[in-house]
Image (tube, rainbow, N blue to C red; front, top):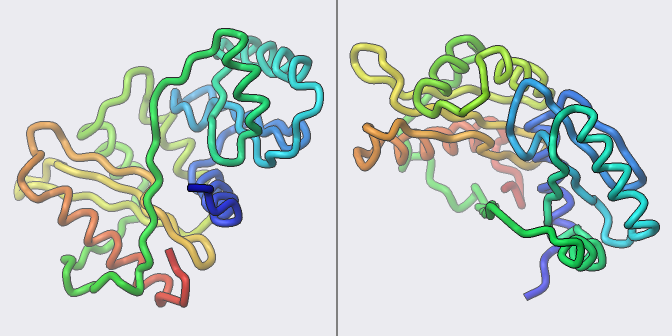
Length: 222
């Protein structure tokens, strides 16, 4: 089944704004993202935003490789429905291997009943969110300063969500971003010892309830 490329472009644009890289370099429709303080692959990879931009692939890939090597990073290429097939074929021929799969799911929030979710109020306390997020989901090589640098750079409207136990210990944390007529859950984690207890469901439904209210659920909202 062919992808809905206009929707993919909108989702990609929103995702890039919702998780902003520190440094962004453009080579035509090729976007090279780098963030020294955060090891996220989405923040340190090459994305192609137009299937038709296929000129001089060999030369441009080598330039991109040198660019990332300068910062001590390997060249990682995100393959999306916007990635030119000829680029994928070239990379495979050069010995590149795919790894990690990200599934992007969409939901028309007009079909979501906010009464199904508990009411959660978002926080704007960056320090509290950063501490909670790293507590429930420690990422090797990621510091509080590195995560704070990313989340404070988010421009669209957003909210931090934290689920805590009675004594205040965080058990789940998430980040929502509302961007024009779309919105997304951009970060979501439940502590390993708190899973299978309903915390993730309560957090997700509470976040979607907030997103629906924030956007006033216009037609086509996802």
